[in-house]
Amino acid sequence: MTDQASTQKTDIGIQQLNISYIVEQDRLLLRIGLNDKSELVVWLTYRITRMIWQLINADAHMPSAYSIQADMPPGQAVQQFRQEVQSSEALQKMDFQTPYTARDEVMSNQPMLVTNVLLHSQNSKPQALELPCLEGINVRINLNQELILALCNMLQLSSKEAAWNIANLPPMLVTESPAMAIEGDKKVLH
Image (cartoon, rainbow, N blue to C red; front, side, top):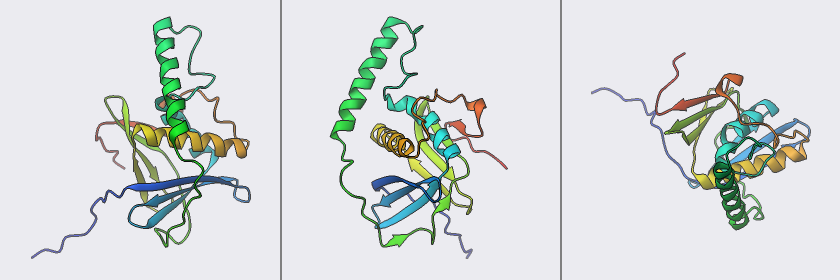
């Protein structure tokens, strides 16, 4: 009988998110409260925050200086405007007022430092955000439209508090940064 390693991927639902700016660290602290009563806590530097924003913001359809271009065909501009209205209405229905509830069990003794961002997508739709950490742990967040919108809103508010001004960044081209968009389930080999 062979002993199998217990390195299974476990899908645990997200109950609550919190992003706050920590002045002393000059970083954002992302806290993810999970439905198994545990939490993940990771540091987001300015570079990582920019990469996340640029990779997922276009799918949030939040109004920005780059959302509707002057050379955009009228039909496409109207469609973008409608999507922005839908996003604004969805944001108004989300609860950003309830204080974050700290969990008893934290996955790591101290916050983990995110070192890169990988966006997994299928048919050009974001499916998951993978955050490799310095501590050797990869945090993978399965995305849906509501989570993309919530993350973008919290990133925008927290980075504004940090005076990072990410809201007016253009969408990222994959070649601009070490962040990667991965189509389908292709894996990167090291």
